[in-house]
Structures are given as C-alpha cells and as structure tokens.
Length: 411
Image (cartoon, rainbow, N blue to C red):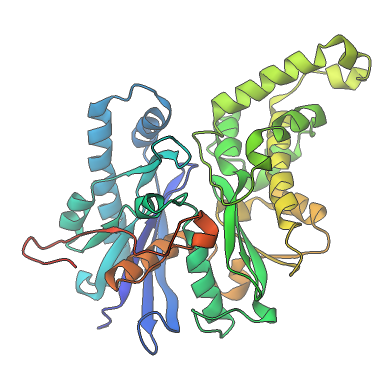
C-alpha cells in the first residue's frame, strides 16, 4: 500500500468506557474538499484502565483538581492512545509512512461554552503521542470554534454532512437531495442529533443524557460497566413522577445551538432529582393524588428504566420537530441497547429506524472517523466547523498541529 491519504481518528466520549480508533482513507476525487471519498480501513476499541477512568472522574468533577493527577493522566493517555494505534496498524500491516496525521479528540474534563470566560478542555499529551507513534498529531479542535463565539460542540455534524453527501452521491459542498434527507442520532455518553435537510443548513445539537447516566447507575448497582442490551432496565418500570421532575431541567427547553456533558448530567444531578422526587411525593397536596403504587419502594432497576426513558423522550421530542424526513439512523454505543431502540421506535412509530451499518457505515467507528476527517481538514487548511450547529460567527480551520519531526515546519 502506498496511500498517503490515510488518517487516524481517536475518540472517547463522556461515558468514559473506551477509546475508539479508526484508520480512514480520504481521497480527494477532484480538488481538496470536493467529492472526497471517505472509507474506513480498520478500527477497534480499547477499554480505559480503571485507574485512568478514576482519575478522569476526579479531573471532571472535583473543584480543586490535583495537578499531579492532571499531568500524569495526560501522559498516560498518550501512551494508551499510542499503543492502541500501533496495535491496530500492526494487525492490518499498515506502516506509519502511510498515515498523514492522527486526529486526537482527547478526553473532555470540562466543557463550559456558556461560562463568563467560555472554554472546552480536553487532555492528552499530543507532543508525546506524535513521538510515540512517529506520526503528526492534530488535537484541540474545539477551542477555535469557541474563540469565534461557538459552542465548540458537537463537531461531528459537519463530518456527517460530508459522509452522507458521498453516501447519496451528492457533492460535499452541495445541498443533499430529497432521498438523502435524514436524521442521525448518536447515542454516546450524551445523545446528539444531526439533521440533514435538502432545504436548510445542517443542524446538530445535544438532546440530553444517554450512556453517561445509564452506565454510571448500572455499574453502581450491578458492578457491570453497562446494561447489556438494556435488559436490566427492561426489568424495571418507569416512574412517571420522577421522569417529569427530570424533564423539568432547564437544558431540555433551551433552543439550539446547545451542547452539554457530564458537567451537568452526572451522578450529582441524578441524586438531586431523587431528592426532589422524595420531597414531591411527600407534599400533602400531592399525596392525595397519588395511589398506593406510587409510594412503593423505588428500586434501582426502576431508576435505570426511568433514565432510559429520559433518553428516549428527550431525543424523540427533538426529532419530531423536524418534519422533512422520517428516516432516522442510529450510531454510537447505544445502538447495541436493543431495549432502548425498541422504546425509541415505540415513541417514533412513523420513523424508519436503522443503524448506520445498514448503509455500510460502521456505527461504532463513526465518531472516531469524524476526528480522522477533522485532521484531514486541518492538514489541508479546510474549515470544518458548522456555524449553524455550534453558533460560531464564521467557518474556521480548527485544530493544533504537532509534528513528529522536530525540524518540520507546520503551516
């Protein structure tokens, strides 16, 4: 193989379950950015070690962060990323000379786009990653979008637009035709949608929590890292009083552009909802309206079932507001949660719901592929943000470029 258009994408979401690695072949058919042919060469996932996951939780939630942990974790992640990349290249006999650059999202420890001083912070050591792999690294994608007034997230809708333009034989810079109109729902730690409409700009935003709360609650009560196929949730029942309290969170009524993460939707948020629930069912006026069933013990599996329904309702209600298509494609880890998908189909009976795999697009590797494409855009000085998604004032080239060679000049 002699291609110099291979790019590697690295991604780990808010659920902190694994690192996804994708090697992607991106071939400009005509000129750069026009009809790029994007295809997955190889991919795999690597679990996050418990110590790194524990340290990331500390860095994400503690007000007074241990600086030693911050420094060590960035270096440890670089080693983990490098091992994952080198193992994948060895498995598929791909030499580093075939890779133009690595697109590394890093691990998000703070995302505060609405703060008085907006920022989004991801950690890794991109310099070390470049040295460990011998491949140039592009990282820190979000903050250039934040610098021009954007949310810095979600970043993948622009890639979805490029990929689906290819999928439906439409040039990447052109409007999609009626047959390609669709909605993508990514069920990662946070659920987000991308709306592809032939008559409008691409739209995308976070709808609310998904695996980040489901996995956390499941691990706390079953000692399993996730609820396989949603079977534990299926054993519980929805508590509608608790669900209604959760749905009152201000985030759900905010207009887009908007983005969120584990800074909001975390175990502290869930505990607060449970406290509000306890207060609510003990109010004298409410007690008279509740049946004996409402006062039964709230079991852990009932909370899991209610959290799953929260994901379904908050995503479905947003999807229903876009009436140009009834095609919904699912990607991300939640695509394997069969019970969640079934509940989503029940909430959206008119929609044809399929995994992106039905189009030949690997649903597990899709986000990692996006960061390979973002690296490709940075290397070729192409803007890759979507102002209609993030709220940025303009389109802009994103990402910081770290050379694997000390004497190499970067544009």
